[in-house]
Length: 243
Image (cartoon, rainbow, N blue to C red; front, side, top):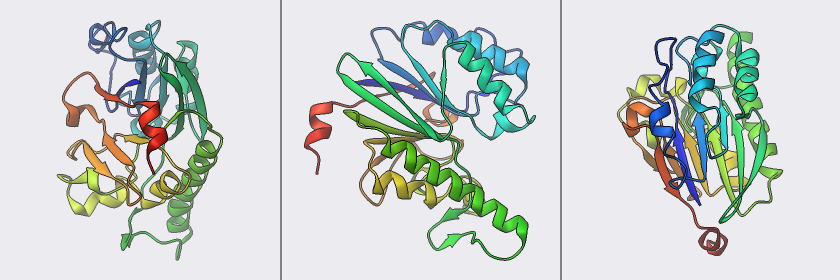
């Protein structure tokens, strides 16, 4: 099962045709394309239409989560609508199943949010503003948990924009780690189970990491992978045999 993935493409109104040539060759190379958020620069509908043009009508199914840039202009719902009209499965606290040549793939997706990681994280205490910050991440993690639980597919992928572990943030200043992800997103990935976790957001991070429970995590932000998409192969028989 071949999974193409990329995030943080940050397409603007002047980006038409930049991504499409590489994606035209996905057929025969990948079985599905997963987009890990920050598809636009400023979260405008005009930029969303450019993204839609780049991914519409591909030979493989496309699923996506939105990122913080896609929320910047307070038009996230409309952006999701534009992408869905182009055939993209946009996930936010829900899951999708794809029946592929090598088996069934389940994708549980949520944007996620910040908060930090064990021992160095924000807490749900104090001002209402701080509690709102942490509670938003808690809600995202809980919706990811529900989405993962809903899947009974051969292979399960968790797709987020924010990072679930600090391991893929190496290269980013430690001071901003709380704004790049949260350990709360990792908990359902390990508790419920996933075979692979994909995220973006951390432009100066590194590609590979692993959760405390042993789930492979990949940072697919385009500035990290430095190509149109990264390709990962998962084999259902091997996944089923894993402890």
